[in-house]
Image: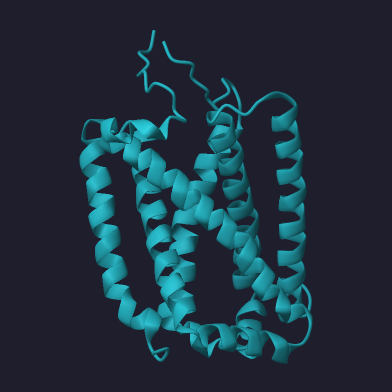
Length: 130
Length: 123
């Protein structure tokens, strides 16, 4: 029989001081997932301006991209997406039985790599907006 | 022992599809970000540039598949998260069908937008 790990009440975020690396990875994956699915609906809504006139689409995108706050939010979106991708790869490997013993280290690696990619991408993401 | 909720169903296929779509999305989401932020810059987006990409069958098909897999992966993820939080019974059914309708609306709107760029299926 397989062993189960008693996580306690999963909805009890008040226990956050007791959380291990794996629990933080689970919470960050959920949080970034919620952000990404929310963004997906927003993204399609914005792109739908292409259904009115070509000019309306071009004007909408260019007006949004001129706003510094939009560029900052895009950097945030990149951070969320990169972490979700890297931690998702970690989860796929763990599901395949690869690296289970080092799952805490691979979570820290996901965080560090996310930070490095996001910092390196900031100049490209904010170019021309400030 | 504390009460535990799990979205995993023995013999179910949603778990497998969540992983299959994840493997696809890891590659395509990274490609999407790279193409539209590094190769082409977001502030240079125009209808004509989007149209030029969408008129290629390969790109059009990839974006439609991206839309469908991202919608499934995202909405199924939300459903699983709510089951893990203990949602069940009628409330869960209401949420489930709301998510199904929202997914259908999102996919239809996304396909309509893709067709507005491509001017029809680019065969």
